[in-house]
Length: 231
Image (cartoon, rainbow, N blue to C red; front, top):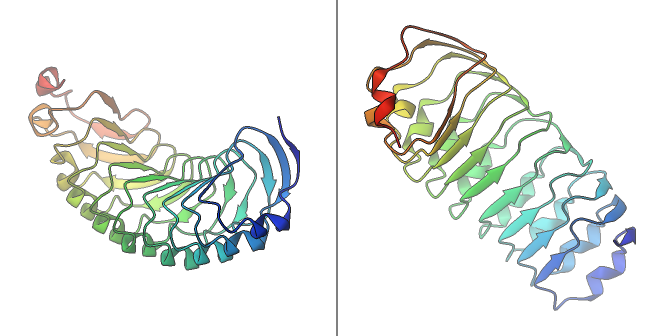
């Protein structure tokens, strides 16, 4: 296992396209100088003991496709400047100490298919603009402090296979557009304050469903017989 800090001198390796320092014992903060790596496409700093914020200078790495910094102790908000990394396809910031709102500008990342913000301290509502990330296949927002309703616009995510919104304080009924999102394989809405009736035809409208978690809410009515038709 590597130990120590990430040296600012890493910026001298301007030819780097991929950095993988995951699963080590690296501590300290991510140096701002990392933004000088203009060729960088993949950055994996996951499973370390990194603190401080996500450097706003990463926006200068305009070729970035994947950012993985999960399982650290990173704090603060997701820098708005990351919207300049228009080629981003995967963002995994799971299990940190990030705060603030879920950024509405994520909808400008037209190639994004994987977004994992589980186990942080994000608050506020789920931005309706999230439904405009048309390439999204995986969306994980569980274990935060999100409130308000589930935006009906999420039903526009026709490629979405995994949706996890559990362990928040989301309320209201589940939008009909979500019950009709036929691409879903996993749907986890457990441990919220959601209510309403589960549609009787949910087994037909979600035919690919394999994992379905609704416990810890205030749903009422019978368990739909149509669920026996789901895969």
